[in-house]
Amino acid sequence: MNTKDRYKFEDNGSEISFMPNYSFLRTLRWWLGVGILAIPVMYYFRNILSENTFTIASVIWGVYMVYFLWDLLFKVPVKYIFDKREKSIYRRLFLTKKIMSFDEMIYFINDESGAYSYVIGKKRNQFVKNYRISNYFSGSKASRVKEEEFLENILYPVLDVLDIPINRAQ
Image 1: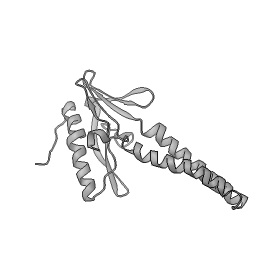
Image 2: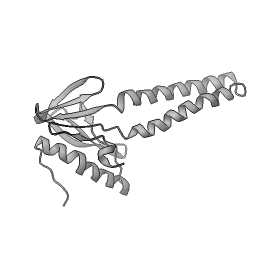
Image 3: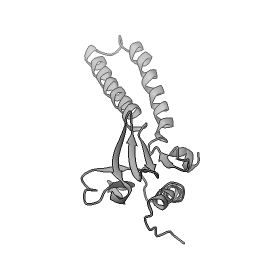
């Protein structure tokens, strides 16, 4: 899967849009399979396990499915739209919401627990409210290759639209 497919990147001339978490959809399908497969396994072992153990396993399964559905419904479908005509940035989940205009945007690298990602935010407010626009990257060789692909195919075209100067690697 190439980078543009991984982020569902689209540039139709009047706007650029992409989904930062779209690549997690394939992983979530596997986790859905594991969650569904757990139901008959738990049902089969319900008489073998004690009532308390079965209850604990059911609660853990329930929490697992809530987190799974949260990711599936509220994280994966997030789409960022950079509208060239209105010079505005929108975030679409179920409804489209304007988050900032082009001249208010700043991008930076957010470092969290050994992994980092690219985020955007409003100037002078970027550390209070920001939006992650990339997957997490680590320092590994494979991750650096994915980061370079992200920069070349996603971030640089967006920054070109925003007229933000870029220090590209030569």
